[in-house]
Image 1 (cartoon, protein in one colour):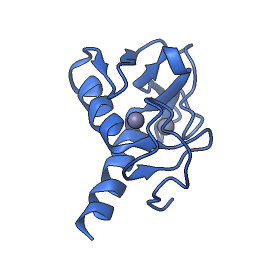
Image 2 (cartoon, rainbow, N blue to C red):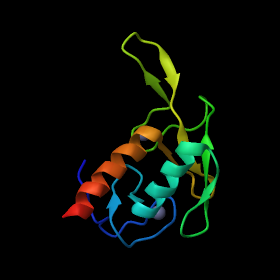
Image 3 (cartoon, rainbow, N blue to C red):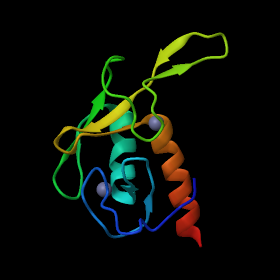
Image 4 (tube, helix red, strand yellow):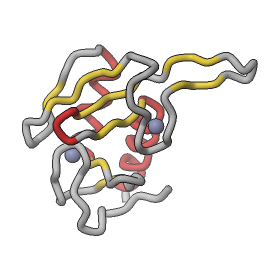
Length: 114
Ligand SMILES: [Zn+2]
Ligand SMILES: [Zn+2]
């Protein structure tokens, strides 16, 4: 996955078409939503996106899969399953997991350095 400027597709979590974004299967996530999502992952409290949509932590293993990687759980090398924390924007039916938020943050950090 490479950093992209979005190619005109709106951020899945706020609808913004501006700024650096990281592409996903259903659409990209923007820098502001990556930042807000990482805060939700850190303390579990809801955050608002720039558009005022609410990002909330998803803890149920049965809730929607991450739309960026298609997972809802982590598998350890012993074959054990651990819950994968996700953040959703119910108003836009968008979901991203902690791992993909971390990855998106890394990609955007690199892109912004250039
Ligand atoms: Zn956004
Ligand atoms: Zn994911």
